[in-house]
Amino acid sequence: MKIKLFVLLCFFVACNLLQAQEDIYHVTCAQEINLKSRYFDFDRKIWVKLPTGYDMMDAQDYDVTYVFDAQTTQFFEMACAYPMFLNSGWFQEGIVVGICSPQEMEYNRRNDFLPDDSLTRNSFGLGKGCSDNLMHFVKDELMPYISEHYRTTGHSLAIGHSLGASFLLQCLLDYGIFDDYFIFSPNMSFGNNMLADKFVNYPFVEVSRHYIFFADAAEERMQGWEKWQAPREEVYRYVDSGVLPVNIVCRHKSYPESGHLASFPLALQDAYKDYFSYREAADAVAGGEAITKHIEVVVNNPKYEVYIAGNQASLGDWDVGKIKLEHVNDSIRAIDVMVQLPAQFKFTRGSWETEGFPDNAIGGINLRIGNKSKKTYTYRISNWADE
Image (cartoon, rainbow, N blue to C red):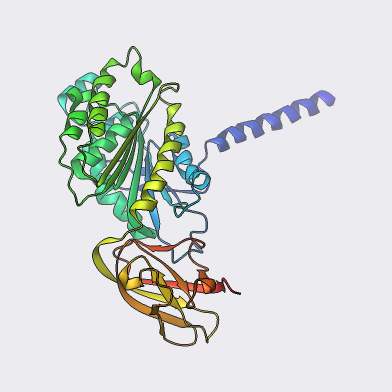
């Protein structure tokens, strides 16, 4: 009897261990979406991780981070987790989208990330490179889907490693798909170093603003990886030469003590830290075309009057008592205002001591509007600094 009980106990323990192993690789709190595409004859698996409190914060728009190689869920999960631990400023959690590559012998990540030129096909023994199709899928199908179904600012960051990073270079140089790029350990040697050559000759224009972070690791400087060195050094020399226009911020960092894969979390941490500082400084001053926004504030006291103060003349240049919202009725104050993006502002009752903290947007920092197409923003305030 004791032997039977012991065997039964071992069976349940083994089942629990197997279940635990499955859970380790489960993408917690992420939505799985399978998108049909006119560029592929199979559905594309996509992960979407929404920030904490997304449903409650209905006046909040979010930046979107696109992570490639998300079939290896650890890449995706680290990209989701790091911002919360690394940043205490304006940038909180955003929407994170993971793009998975198939893992079949006949079609896998190499097909996804590599171009369809003969030199590349020969060097990789590749039947067909489909990076152009994947770029079109992301630009024409995935990004519009995300913008339509979620509240986004319209600002994008892309993260890729190894061949995924090589793909991001193609996105930058061929279509300018994303705003900012983390390009970790890219292979730039295929096609006779064509990505490096294209990068150093690319006509970056003043109207497009990009942040680019390059990383390389120990193995890429060792025997067997010789082909990677020349194009990497070509890019680094170009970046260090100072010829890039001021609207392009490009960093690079080496991790000589870490391997090709092990360097990813280190590079991700460093890139995020620097990126947060860059965005905070770059977005402090609005620019570009002025767009009309209708802003409403729902108050908890019919006697309260509400003022708006923000980062441009139409918002009072942070003069706390200059621009008053219209008293629509007992609960609503409103204003139609022309703003340049990103607009940053706060609400008060006429002094900083009476600042209001919306219940449905991230509090304690400047409120932000970055979405060009969204016309109306409604904030609900029941918490004031003097109450």
